Image (tube, rainbow, N blue to C red; front, side, top):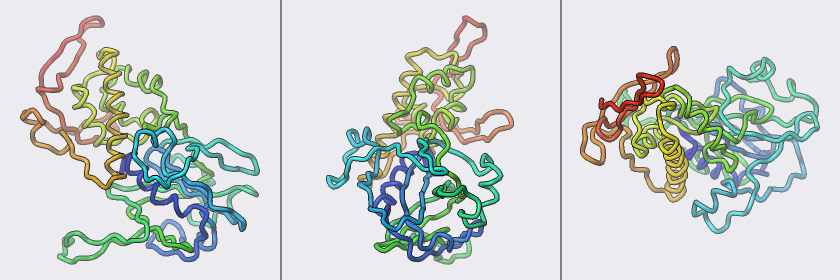
Length: 339
């Protein structure tokens, strides 16, 4: 599924529509009635980890805000178009008439309360407190995307040999242009409910918290995909940063030195920001090891599925020559093996 940098790109596409009225809706969503969005105004948009949040309301006199496509700290590192304005990344949402700080990270539909679950197929105003403002959360599938003022076109024939264009899950027509959402899950919620300190592209990303998580006696490839500490980090980033840091994916964090872990964390941030830079410039990201057969040094790459016991197993690529596994047979004995 799209990772943190892709979500930031989606957010950039959505930002110009904030403040506009939804005049027409479409799409093939079966989980919610798109018509409930008609004549609502898009009041805010936020991205947290791998989720995009859109805030809708009935405000008649809402002025379009000075939207910014990226957090302030990333504008210093990423070359944005000159016309972008300053904007504070973390905004607030009003719940029941009170202002509540918004936060960031992944949340799943299964983690919603019964109220939010029940409201998926009903208009939001039937199930939310008076004066509350609804947020529509988008969680994208493996090939999920957002397009502004254009529809996705088929790039190859399907299994039946037909050149059929992908069908958007939701299309929002505004006074000026439209947004099309593909291959995504949508559900109503009362706003982002998780912390920005876990978001790898957030100004508030907590390195100390991330390092403490990495130090645990778990394979680092498991920890990197834990959205509680590395929200927005997906399988591509995981594979690439482990190779850049020369760390075997199954090395236990507790067996690695502080220097190793600091280096890994540096690569997490720098690779993510660099990938975002390329996306904003319309350039492709060239991978060093992800889905490759040889590493840049010419060594044969190995591939296997790793994941926590009884958890989701993710394909992992690594070089047994460049990424030596660190294991500990005794509490104070660290050994390097080659696999």
